[in-house]
Image (cartoon, rainbow, N blue to C red):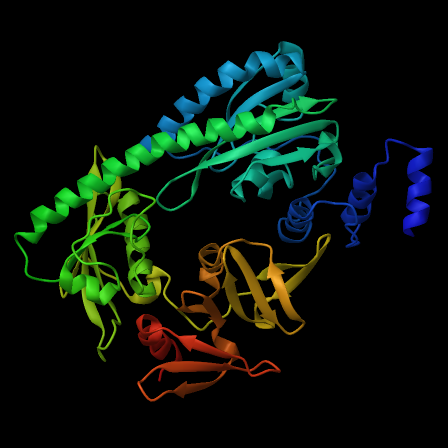
Amino acid sequence: MPKEQRLQTLARNPNRTPVYIAWERFVHGEDDVDGVRPEVAISWQRSRDVYRINPFLSEAPNAVSQSANSLDQDAVFAELGFCAAAMAHEVASAGGVVTIADANGRIVAAWGDKTTRSIATEGGLAPWYSWSESAVGTNSMGTALATRRAVMIKQSEHWLQAFHSWSCGAIAVREVVNGEPLAVLNISCWGGDLPLSARKWLESSAAHTQNSLRRRGHDGGTELLAAYTHARGRSTQPLAAVDTAGAVVIADDAASIILGVPGNTPAVDPVLRWTPQLPPFIHAARYATKRAKSDPGWTGSTQIFTPMVDEPSSIGIRPVFLHSNLVGHLISFGAFAGEQFPQAETGGVLLGQQSRRIVALREENRMVMLGTSEVTMAEADGNEVWLHTDEGKLKAAISGLDKFENDLSDTGCFLRVHRQYLVNLSRIREVEKREKGELVLVMNDPGSTTVPVSRRNSRAVRHALNI
């Protein structure tokens, strides 16, 4: 339908807003998202093409049973509960409810007036129903879990038509170490707009809870520093203490050279820790975190390539706990411990390419769905990520090169070669070796773009390309 005709239709029927018209066309397979906010349009795309959710579901599905919560999750639920109870009276006067959901989108608690809660319960906006994006599509809770800011979803922006009478806002509270969501706080109002104070209240509540988590993360850093000091007096091997995401809390002089971080410089604050310039090391630490969370007695060893050494080096990993809560690991170079696992299991670079769609923005209201083979490289410009593609340079929908790298780590297609560049291994045409041993990659795009390889990443590049 031409834009002029759509406006005429809207004039005859004021309930058919431009967003509703776009939704109606999109759910029937068209890609015109004129007038729809980019974050909503991107979520619609995931709802339709990735999760394949029926937009005409009448209610949210029941949530599957979940495993026991961590100490951090319990602390977050308690803090958000106080915030929600304090806000409940204001929300009730606006005909709304306040909910808290876990990291999987399962609602665990709800507050609000009896009448509105009864209406909400009929559609599944109540405890033990799932509101993840993969379960019900675009909605404030599920979409907030997929982003790093408050998300406001108004009426027909919801993927489910059954919730087009609701306006909702939500924000996720995340771990300070690895950025993974722990819980999400949500306000939903039926038949009208959210209170004007909703966004500010959500952001303030989340910030208060994040500060509490930061204090707990600081305690974890202090415990890692103590464990490192104790182990350092009993070992002569290069040693580092890392958190659950692989960031360095402290490394001795020998380990700091290998990792490209300052030596003997403690970083107990979870937001100020050192990032190792050795991707396989980070992958090994994250694999260890996954194993130790399911088996507290786990220890392990693997082999990784390190700078200026032709043969792989062994590392031994021992988890560190504080009050039964995993806070990180001690990692020794040249050591062995427990399970011997191959580097491939840690999420290291593999050349097998898994199918995945990468979302880019061509214009403010137009998305491009790219296959991994269509993206030559990703380049960081501050917090923005620019994709070099077969269709030219496009802005990625995801902000932050680290986040972009993590989201695509399971594809095996992309490798970080520099703090500013992530390249598609299958799109490398030539490798040029400069006079001082530096490597430069020549990509197989029309302009034969050249990409520098940092010294700290050159070993990973050689290993991935078998050169």
